Amino acid sequence: MIPGGGQPNMQQLLQQAQKMQQDLAKAQEELAQTEVDGQAGGGLVKATVTGSGELRGLKIDPQAVDPEDTETLADLIVAAVQAANENAQNLQQQKLGPLAQGLGGGGTGIPGLPF
Image (tube, rainbow, N blue to C red):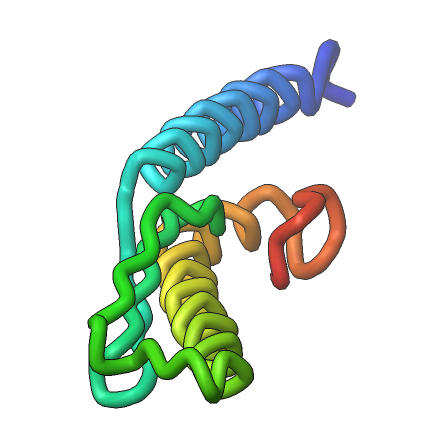
């Protein structure tokens, strides 16, 4: 028997886990500051969200505004925001996916993220 066998490995694992947690926190911070766009109606409506999904801006081309048909405008706004959020989710997966898997993620342990 080796006295204290396994201790260095446990310490190394803890250090690796701490580094992954720090990397994950850094990536999440970068996502919160990164903006991505989505559009609808051939660019008549554009939405800007952060990489973490916070709506930051909405641009509506005057051509999209028809007082007689506000329902279509509402649909374009929803579609643009959904497209921007989809782009934000793709960015999340690119930045956080490998980190989440390294932490044993895969749907557990990272609330609010689709992986």
